[in-house]
Length: 207
Image 1: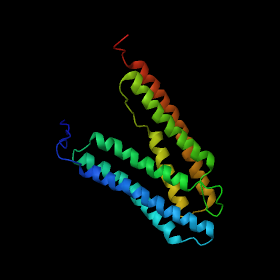
Image 2: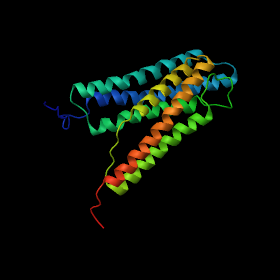
Image 3: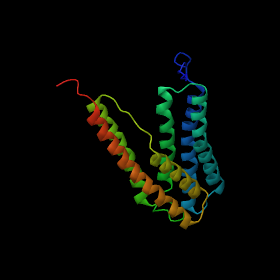
Image 4: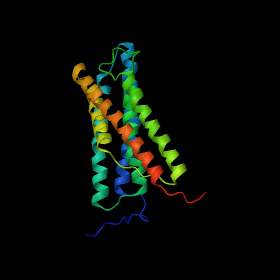
C-alpha cells in the first residue's frame, strides 16, 4: 500500500492550515460577543442576539475541526504546522468558553459551568504542557498518543458549552459537565502513564 507523502513543504500554507487559522481568528470574535453579552447581563439589559451570535460562531468553529482534518488527509497535506495549530484552536475555543461561562459572581448567567470543573480542565491542560516539557528535556522528543477518552472529553465539553450558550435546562447540562469531568480525569491519568512509559523506554545516549 502506498503512503501519501506530505508534498506541501515548499508551497506555503496549506488549505487545511488556512481553515485552522480561520478557526483561530474566530475565537477572539467569540470572546468579544460573550464579553459584551455578559456586561449587558450585569446591567440588566442583555442583548440575546450577542449570545446567539456567540453560539453560532462556537458551533462553526467547533465543526470545522473535522473539516480541516479531512482536507489535510484527503490532500496529503498533514504538516507539522497543522499538528500544532489544530489542537491549539480547539483548546483556545474551549478554554475561552469555560472561562466566560464560569461566572459565580453573575448568577443571571444560566446555565454556567461549576468552578471545580473549569479548574479540573485547566489543571489537566497545564499538567499536560508541563509534562511534555519535562519529557522533551529528559527523552529528547515527545510522542503524543491520542486517546479515545481525551476525544470523548473534548466532545462532551463542546456539547456542554453549546448547551450553556443555548441556555438549555440545568439538569441535563450538569450531567454533561460531570460526564466530561470523568473523561477529563481518566485521560489525564492515561497521558501520565504514557509519559512515564516514554521516559523509561527512551535510551540514554550519554552518561
